[in-house]
Image 1 (tube, rainbow, N blue to C red):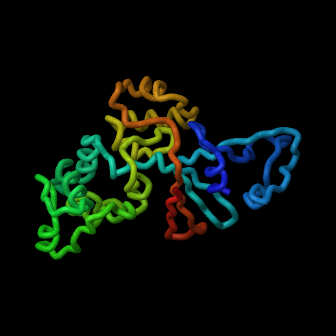
Image 2: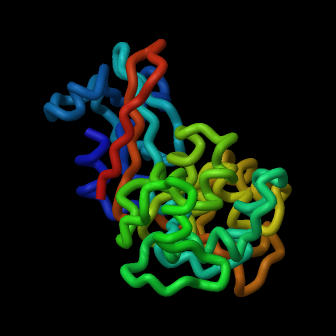
Image 3: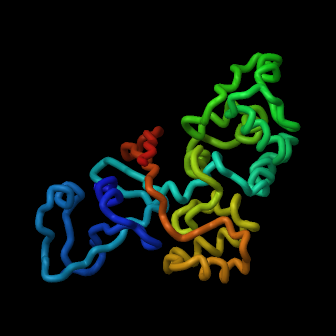
Length: 253
């Protein structure tokens, strides 16, 4: 039902259309997702009361199943990440790692490109071989967890679990993220300050941002604001059983 709703809706700042069950006793509602998916008539169908699936990491429950849904636009893309300040903030995640943003940028670029040209702060096959590490694949990463195999990134991300990485990063796309759906951690990497990220979360919990002008006014930022207010064409879905210790994570594009 989630994938169907996303695929058949243009989406917008509020998310995508979704049956609302908090409109009151006299409002139409579905008993469960199966009823919605099957096309069953809602109860008390005197009113049309559609809500929105926000796609911002809220946890949904269906029986013992749990799902967390995030718009892929709320994830930081590494393929076209032009804002070097984001690399600097990533490097600062672990000050003990003693690596720079330039190092993270260059090692990732060397890891993915197909040549053996060594960037100023990068690392190529010989560097990995000297350390007894698997050589770079010389291709685009297939999933964000491969960052643990990149020199420099492995040290910076050592203190972060897989869930943290998967809630912030995607390997395609660029650094512009959807301020209505990104996690606070992702916003802290893209926006100039943690205070600004907290302000965005607080405001959107009351009302979604309707324009980039609203977002810029809140943050007092000009043209270099690396955030927008629209979803992208895709979802990242976590699914697990209630009480479970692991989740399956799917990228839907």
